[in-house]
Amino acid sequence: MRPVEFVDVEFFRKQLGVECTRADPSRLVDWTGQVKNQSDTTHYVVYPTTTRHVSCIARYCVSRGIAIVPQGGNTGLVGGSVPLAAELLLSLDRMASVESFDDLTGVAVTQAGATLSCLDRFVKAAGYTVPLDLGPRDRVTVGGAVATNAGGLRFGRYGSLHGSILGLEVVLADERGTVLDLGLSTALMKDNTGYHLRNLFIGSEGTLGIVTRCALRCVIDYPSVQLVTVTCRDFEDVLAVLKIAKRELGEILSAFEFLDRESLAMAASQVTQDEVDGLVGGEFVGGDSSDEFYCCIVECRGSCEEHDLVKIDRFSRLVDVGPNASARIVDHGDHDRIWKVRTSVSAGLKAFGTVFKFDISLPTREMHEMVAATRRRLEQGDAPPGTVTCGFGHIMDGNLHLNVTVADRFDDTVKSILDPWVFKEVKRRKGSISAEHGIGWY
View 1 (cartoon, rainbow, N blue to C red):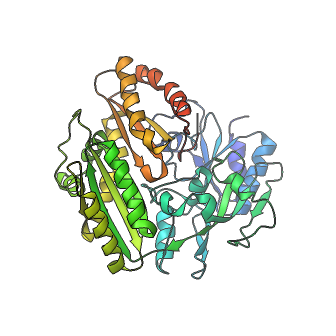
View 2: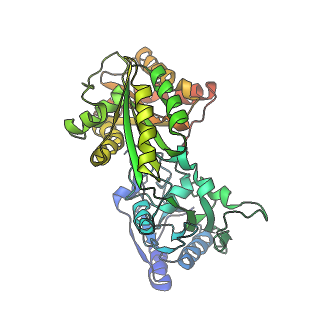
View 3: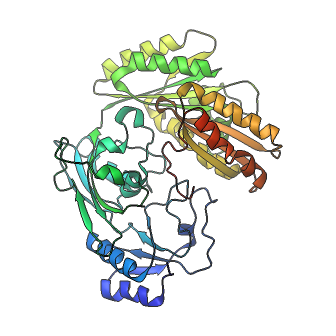
């Protein structure tokens, strides 16, 4: 594959009529700051505005031996949208329209560059919401979410995108720039007339084709939203609370998140003490205590607040009966503050130093032991002072975000201790090395 040359840029600009410029350095590195393009070649980014443009660009690049890297919001954590060498970046930023919405079926047809927050605002006017909720929703694009099969906070309630995507339009990187309609024109909820080829592209990370348009089934934006926080003194109590939540909250349970002591400390560095206290009721004091401490965020969404509050009250009373677990119903006005703490963990980790991020699926009972095993591994491997291990994530889905951060600098010692040990350990525990972040450069 050859790098993009001036003659190629001129073709895109003059013959095709699309913008093509030198890539901003921020496009050549992923969110963690670790996965960076090491090539000294000048990189270009092209901005198509239609599917026809994408098809023409693909056809041209194949004929000229130019490799393409599709890029959405570039919020990934494994370098999937970062060029390895001198590839052409194909940005979907200019293909950001929500084309249609059916307020009876809840199906939205949108271009791949539309962000989750933009789509959510559009469908909320009709009483719906997007089933996918991720922290950087103002930057995450629909196409990027589809390409990585992103999971997010609502996975336990609504499942993966394989169930929410009813149709895709995809451009293949072949000599014709073939455009495939994979159920997009019909967007039927039930269609058993053949292979569901769209599922091949959900989670393919741009390796099979470029997602240009999508038909996404949205869900009712229930008016009753309740939040309960639960603090626990050991992981067995977290598991017990999860079982109670599933049994007592049932159909209204929409999210169940957990954070350990170290994760809370990282979040606390990015928010106010009042916001932390709002989450844990003043119990958390931070620091590197050897005592276990966990906070759970339990969210419920339903159609009748009176009904939901009865269930929430019963759940809270059942949880708040022993010395190791304490539940608190959150005032509606504090909901955003609670979620702000949860979504600030990653920012706190990044601000602390170099972050080694592992997004893994495990049998739920194994989550705490995996974090503890990682700490032991680092201690035995003489990790440098200031190395912190955090465990948090979507416990209802069996998805652990295992993060190790080293103060101030990149440390090869820590990398050599963890890689490939973490992956082997996950395999030994019959888990998956990628729950929702994808594979990327790995």
